[in-house]
Structure formats: C-alpha cells, structure tokens
Length: 125
Image: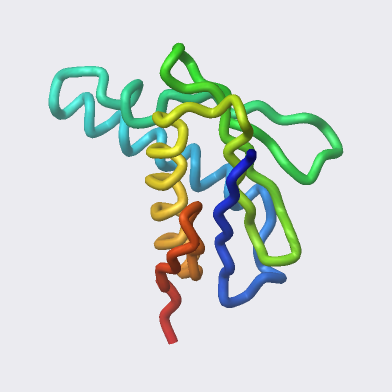
C-alpha cells in the first residue's frame, strides 16, 4: 500500500512544483560539493535519484539510479506538497524520502507530516 508524507507551508498559495524541483537540485548540488570536499562520491550516495518530469502533470518522480532505490513521487495536493512512496519503493527510498522531506520542510518553513503520521513543525512566526 502506498505511503504519503505531506508538507504544509504557511503560505500554500506560494508553493509550486518549480520551487520544489529547484530545492531538490540545490540539495543534490550541496551533497556533491560535500563529496568533493571529502574526496569521495558522497553526492551519489546522498542523492541516488534522477528527476523525471512528465509534461502537463502536477507531479514528478525521482527515479533511483541503482537497485537499492526505485522511486519517490512528489506532487501537489490540497494539503500542500505530497510525497508518495509507491508499493515498489524500497526501505532505502523511505529513508531518503524522510531525509528529503525534512530538508524541504526546513527550507519551506513548513509543517511536515511524516509517513508514520508524526508531525514536525518548521514554520516560523
């Protein structure tokens, strides 16, 4: 059964998929730079995905680059941003999705409802 996490920013009207994609690209860049400083390919381990878009859709997905990671789907919902782990997702996908959700929530100052139902508040007044 698919599992979902939700990010609810303070200003839902300001959220769009382009912002989320930009933040994921930024995440990949900083992980790669960390790897360069450490002299190993940390970026490949920290972000083992390729961003795949379908034109006209209100969602995109992250396709795993190896057998440990398969797919994470990200889209817009009435609650804000929805991150979905489909049935074929691995434990690695869930761990990375939790990591990415926490990063996005921090950057967007959003409330995060994790896959297990727990809530993390990153909103600032």
